[in-house]
Image (cartoon, rainbow, N blue to C red; front, top):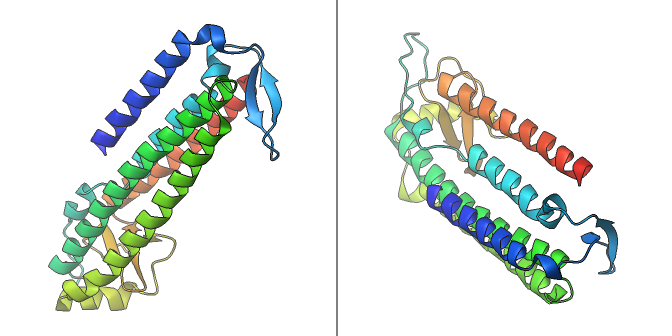
Length: 241
């Protein structure tokens, strides 16, 4: 993920530098939106805010994607639970969660870079519409959709096969039986669970985060703050743009 963030930052910086070099070629007012028919239907005065509008939005979106991606540290966040009916710790459950989180991190890294490329193509198409044809954006958007779909299918298939290649041990079988009715929407709450995450057969491609575990609680709080902050930043950009 760090490499993906660095690559995205480099692409955004290069795009802004290029727009700066071509500042005289950018029209004033600046096109900021294209309607369904492919024609510009909204303009704004030429400023760095409008000229880099899609890029600023992209920075916010990519930051949220990075902050919302689960960390491998969740797998190792084991705590002691003294209660006699506590859920057992499972080595195969930990290995399964680590595998899925690793795949998710790679997927989100690729998606982050792809999102960066798409938004930069969008901005170049808007700012230099007389030089950069709309076909550039269409190709970028088609490639983005294809990458997202193919990568999602791939991670889903590999996650499903993990239950065959990594059979659950006795402890994980107990965990699955007791958590199957608790988890949903990627979250469950179990005070007696020593683990912060779980992966269940019903949703093999989804990491379930334990909101009752300190590490899980911190992760969910960070995700919520990132989403709320991104919404506020996006609204502010739209208003000032």
